Amino acid sequence: MKQNSFPYAYWVKILGVLIILACIVIFSMKYYYKGIFDFNELAVGLSWGFVFFFFSKEKTDDEMMRGLKFRSLSNAIIIAFSITQLYNYFFLNLSFNREHDDILSISAYQFLALTLIIATVNFYYLKHRLSINEVE
Image (tube, rainbow, N blue to C red):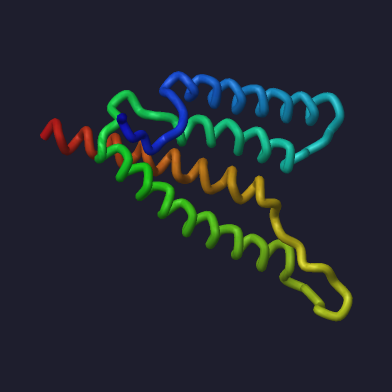
């Protein structure tokens, strides 16, 4: 029995891209027709799309690709958490008064979307860099 680290087949990447595109189209249409910026809804769609895209198998599904994905995801969590903390502090809670105010924060979907976008970009950058090194 072959052990696979990623639960989705390679073709599920197409489903992820379709979800991302549909989400962007819906977000754009809501803004164009109603003037609404719904970043939470955008983040939900991006999260689902990037979950399918990032956690699908690669054409070459070997130990090196799994290591690159793990490394990308590990780095992305730290980077996204740092960005989230800085954004929450400087833009949402800079004038926070403990006696009168509620603590504001970005949603979990926004954090997940940011993390998966960073992980995906980082993975394909590392994969590209690896392919350049193999050619030389």
